[in-house]
Figure 1: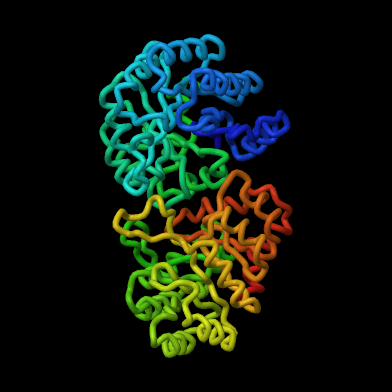
Figure 2: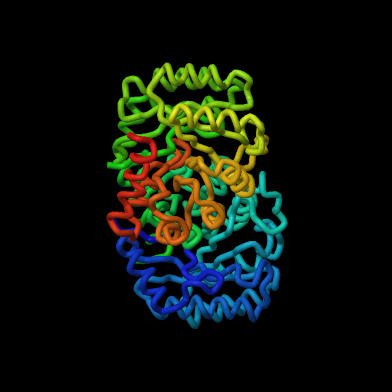
Length: 256
Length: 251
């Protein structure tokens, strides 16, 4: 079965950047059926609020990774929305022009409901990019100033219905997160994050439709064999598994 | 042929999980290559007296020979001796599970001296459950943390001649504990990072690791694939997948 992993950090805290490590990752991933991997970047290297120079440096590392293995990696442009419209537009323009990035990755610089998201969404619209927003239920974590609860990510999607948004971390968003996202046509959820809790894949397929669920691992924080096995073992149809593991992301990002 | 050391029957109040009968659970496990399993009943987690759950467990596994019952005992209850006796009379048990965080005692509890000695006298293994869920995703009103690694280390030092199986321990905690104590084994359901097992066997001997899936709270297939698809020698996979459990529980 062909698989696209829509949520991975091949280089995290500078680990995994050596050519031999990258080659090993590709070899192991392909052995599991992964044909393309979306590299979201080393997004926590400089903490919650990286400077514009740090953001550019991280995107350059991610861009070079994609250039070194264009048949495997697809990179997203990491942004710190708090830096403002000018910095956001400049960085997106630079990364799309120089590397051909396919999407925008947002981490924990701010909450997705804040006003600083407006230029980010305008950049996504202008350059035709998908936005992947870090999301996690804040019921127990109490850090909503920086983290986006599924309610916040869903609000972002409803405010910008012409931009396709991926709500990261199905496990972290949980059953409530699925219900928040229900009925939001431009919102997709990736299956990354957390241990392979039983029942969530089926619940997401039932309430969002399998077309809105994308396989993601959160590698290296999670293991591909586990995150793939969770979908293969789910009580859903073979056709829905194929959609989640490959077809949805291929269509969303225009990958063949 | 895999042996799963961490499986449960019964409902979980916070997730719409499949509720299996004994034979249904055995069939579900077999789909992932698991031929034998050590099984407890989740009702024992929340009941003030776990015995009704244990009795249901013994009844459920009677028609499923692949499932080996592991009753849950609360050593802080005054009646634990008679409850242990009842469990031993009900079925040929090989181990007993304790849930200190859910049953409101710590691993410093004085009750554990007699309890651990009684298990040893009876030739029973102790399964010490560290957690059943990721703390970040618990039901909002359930303020339950996993058993801290410092408490596990204290327990292991207090009973140096005993060798429990730790269930539900996180990978960083396991690696830390492995550097401090040698008298325990661990199942792997809550251990995960890229190349989990390849990294783990560098920190703790493979002969002290066992397959555990935490079914039905976690995906059985996903947890099995962590082992089956790992880049490890077949011999190491066999140890973790079934040989260690077969020896440890005398199956």
